Length: 359
Ligand code: SF4
Image 1 (cartoon, rainbow, N blue to C red):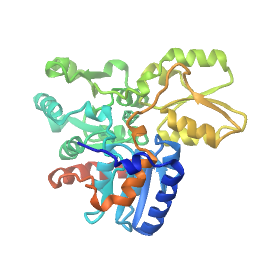
Image 2 (tube, rainbow, N blue to C red):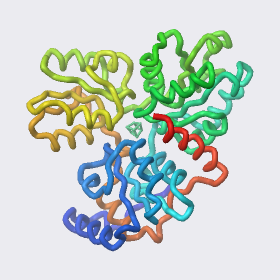
Image 3 (tube, helix red, strand yellow):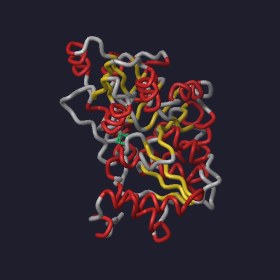
Image 4 (cartoon, rainbow, N blue to C red):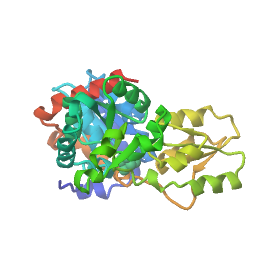
């Protein structure tokens, strides 16, 4: 995709951009809603009508029938999900359409279909329930819906496991191996109950026996932001700040999750920080823009990133700037909305609607 911001918007000063956004929002009134993900830049979040994680924002998109336009400041799979869940006469725009998610890109539909062909010999739809993380392309969501499965987010992954195992004997979890693994451990499985499907190897690098014995098959995808965190960061933090509470996101590796005080979705982290008493020290293992915003929001608490040695920034979330937002709000009539093909939409919606029911 080609996207180039016109010079006028590239070179505008922040104060001018803020004023133009304010005026454009005012003109649109109740016809539009701006949704901002927690990992967006602080100045973008300020203009959001709602801020949330992918689960919360998709719920808002699904229930915003009153608006004509949804401006989604997030990454591509989120805007696609908003298009799938909104009605046909609503339009979804991404202020910066280049913002993708590398983890979602790790589960290409051609690789998924090849894996499924192999797994069909071991029971397919009768035995194996596909469960896909929200962070996935619309094609994978449609595959999931078509095969009876559902979408989950880090907010409802536990409930999604319960739902899946009530119906079939195994789960095929896409694309985040860490969320899938950490949820499996929480569900009560042993590490040996879970196997890793390596899509770069023939038959995922697994034998028929390994698949037959497994309860969960994990797609080998990961988030490069959350896998920055290591157990040694927790050890160092505990030595330096023995009083600190450590809260991390379940996309972090198991060694981090096991040693933290609490683990949960982005919304969980926001609530956790809010609930700690004034004067608390809190080390957070997630995306840096959210941590900065929390530190700004709660000046009475010491809030910092779990490791000072890394900068866990999601460069894709960071792509959306005030310049993009101003341009998009003023020119959306000339911009191509995010549209998911009708033949994909139907099954993808099925999987997403199951997600909204299961929590
Ligand atoms: S933080 Fe990770 S999972 Fe989330 S959008 Fe960025 S790369 Fe994707």
